[in-house]
Length: 148
Image (cartoon, rainbow, N blue to C red; front, side):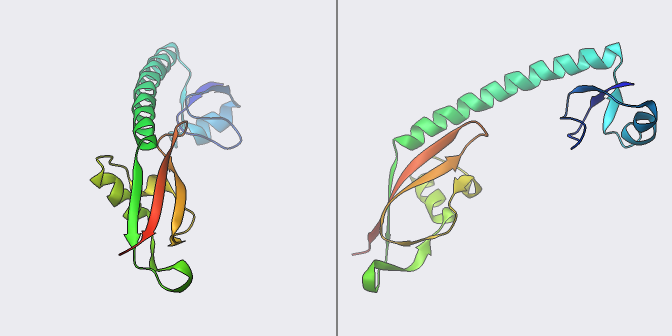
């Protein structure tokens, strides 16, 4: 039986794919759980339409993310923190601090989009990756300096 997957299924395929499975698997598992729909002419036409709409939307989102990445490349952030012995910070610079500093510069991003494996605990120059889209990554130059 040919079906169209509505969700990703590990051993079977990705959402939107047209796959062939055994009749019992489709009738007793996939269709009742709404994980797939039967591959009728109407559903195939709907799938093609949905793919075009999704592709257009993704292109728009990707273009927006590319524009933000370009804007991020031109931003130089400077964050001042109190420093103790051996240039160690009192506290740390977190993704939230960086997101707030970017917002002050006019670039709004979600703090969860910043790729910061651990908080910054020393002064210096850093380059922070920002995931804007699964295909687009931006970079922000960050300078952590001692507070005067």
